[in-house]
Image (cartoon, rainbow, N blue to C red; front, side):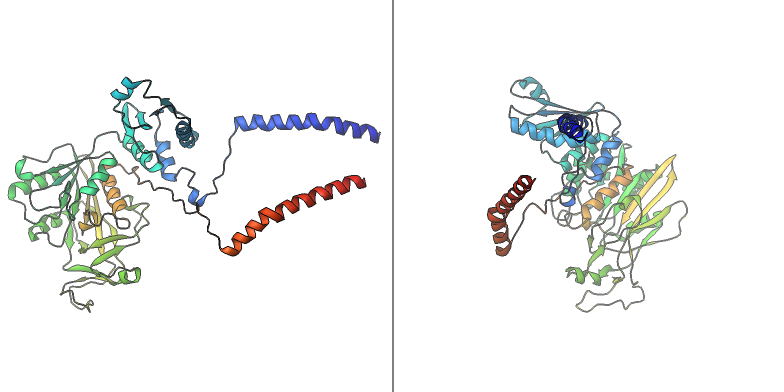
Length: 442
């Protein structure tokens, strides 16, 4: 009987092994599992990208105009495989522009590997293939209507399309990347602010507005228009009546922040914001923002508006009203110790819709010279997203690759070298001899 079971075990082993192999192959074809153990999961899609894909309810069609290069074509297929796993109705088509030059010309394709993305009758083109640029393109396709950001000009404001260090040209470029339309408007050369304006921007005028210009601003706000007011220290005093109308007052002097020295910021007139409240306009912000020569805000009783502080300085800050000397401290009656409010978000029901206003006590944080500091750019984008009602717009970070390089000292290098050259072969030989010895002993 024992011999029978031994033979049965011997002859059944190979069929069972083949059955197991075919079962694993069948499971591998029907189900897919993968794990990403890289630093910061850089081979996986970010949560922001997955959120965008889940919001896209309709099929997404992607055309890649790439020549007959097997390596490049395989890279493109591999790149989009993660997206197709998250959104199965993504179709990818590789088109050789050498074989279909007229189609490529009609699409305006000029770069090998250029992408044309189609969604709900709209189209975006992409020349650089990475998650950040693709996510931004998908965000633009999600916007259901055109959003116009109009910046007032002609009274010494920071130019929305300007290139000087104090202008906002770089910020405008980022807005365009997100799908917004950006334009400057001189109220002295127009009858009114266009009705299709999504957000009106007032950024630090140096000259007071004329009565006719004021009427255009007031009419815009009375019609329920949204406003982003970047208040500067040098704003005309007459502009305070806009703050009174909104229920916001500015404290005298400049914000001085002594807490910046601990972070390497030597200029005390740069206000720092590190903690953001739970508000849609500042959600997901975790990076320090810097505000040079900022003014503090205070809410006053005003009916109709719901005001919420969205930016506040630290405990070691105050509004300095005296001269900025080497040794300064809060010592005047009208100086208040922080936290100080630096930004306010206002909202009310007007003209059968939600009217939104954001007032920031600083305009230089979005200037060309300081836009790249800390979280200034993400904050500015979030403010525009909230004002325009496009809160799903997010800034997609690039995955870092901090673990691509392995640095070993001489001792570890020697140990690994000896291990692979001598210890590992010796271990394999010893294992083989032990197995052979045990078999012969049977």
